[in-house]
Image (cartoon, rainbow, N blue to C red; front, side, top):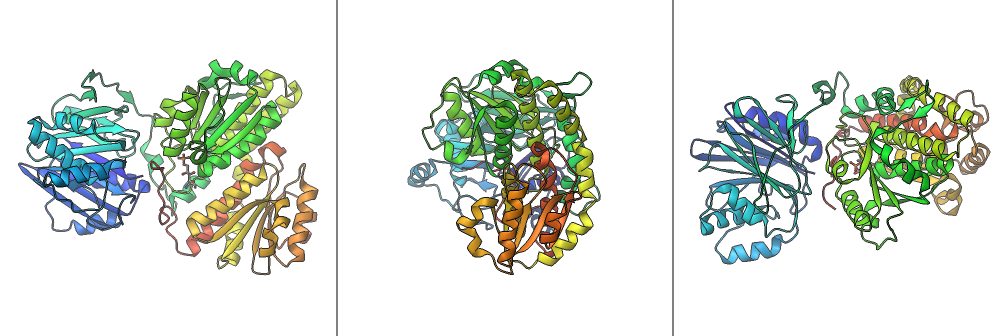
Length: 614
Ligand code: M6R
């Protein structure tokens, strides 16, 4: 939530900042702003709305300066308006600051600074930081980096910040605690700064991921200097980015979401590459190899995540229980962290997160880690906070996911959970040799089958058109299709703003059936498999109440075809892998309904891609 960019070097900072903000806009789009230092002057420009609104606002404004910072906001404290937009300035006008995170003790700091004569203009928690740093700088008579360090010592909360000072025109000071920050090392002593690597990759591949409690000094012409909050010097660890620029562009698609849906054959394949070895008949997950035996011995696994990642965790529950015969509990990270869960050193906790920055998931990890559990991460963003705090893990290799609605991340997470379950089941002997081999073969064919599902897009769009005006929708499934029903409903809600509910199909008769009438579209996952007959009965119950059935069925199905208003066929696969196929038509339905309703598909209202606040 909130995107931060910065540049210091010889070039014009403004275009670099604006491009960077466009890349980070998925993190929040309530307001945007920049601060540029030019000579001894500091110019702050900001406004409510998107980065394009900021660009319009900048027409005719002073844009000079080769040092600058920029921000795109997802509002927490104070409504989205011009005043609450970042950067915020100190009363002296010397400093400007941007922030991602939440300052928990801002009220106490604000009160203290108000007594000391500081005047606050905004409703934000952030503004206290810039006043505090300015106050410390003056009273302690220290330079900017030291003022930032001393000030942060009294701050409680999460932050990634960047500060510029008109008296130090060639310098940006940045710091992080629980919110991400990446520094790019460019040529000739230029430095880039961002919440993630996407704005940096087009300038340099050399990056340093700032650690919690570190303060970085980026000065034109100098090497990067890092100290921690205790004033100990740190040696920057420079890594090479593996990201490619094309992955950050729409590549001819109208929206990132559509591109990402269509990327799934590739992203599922990439999540399996080098891990599933048919020739040797084995699954190797290098990142968790040292923990294999621990998995084999585990009596229980806990899975934590939020939103779509939680849904992937629910699919993982079915997979791990079925294939590896380990008892699994799946928890919303946000609930788990505020209970006093019974966990000990025998437990394994799998934390799932696309961004690797979700605050609730991070807090759940810290809690479980504190109780001695082994923490395994399934993350998409390399080098993200969750990837770094877990003991071990497997990346999903889905590539950057820019659309706020998670699509390819879900199928990549399910793919990794499938591989994990197969690996453990095989080691444990809960899957017989021949069955294991058949499953590996089948899994390898899944990307081609997803490709086939995507070919039905025209039919799916036609169905979307019929139900575009529905104001409610129900999604039903049994077994591992229940989490897919939840995921389908979430997709519709978040990008179309249409109310939708996912239910286990058999639970419908315990309440939701009262909602069914001729206006209600009911999406049912009714593929061939263990609960097929039961789902057919549930479909009959809906039909008897005149509900409209849109069923996801296995190719060649006859029984459901006779009952349903529409069927969308997916290729046949084993029960365990159905979610990887059945979710795709539901993603496409939501996408097309949202487009037909003229919604902002990639940046739905009130949301942000990476939820770094609790
Ligand atoms: O980055 P994470 O996977 O931790 O994010 C979790 C949720 O915020 C995320 O899945 C959210 O629900 C998506 N918008 C769903 O499409």
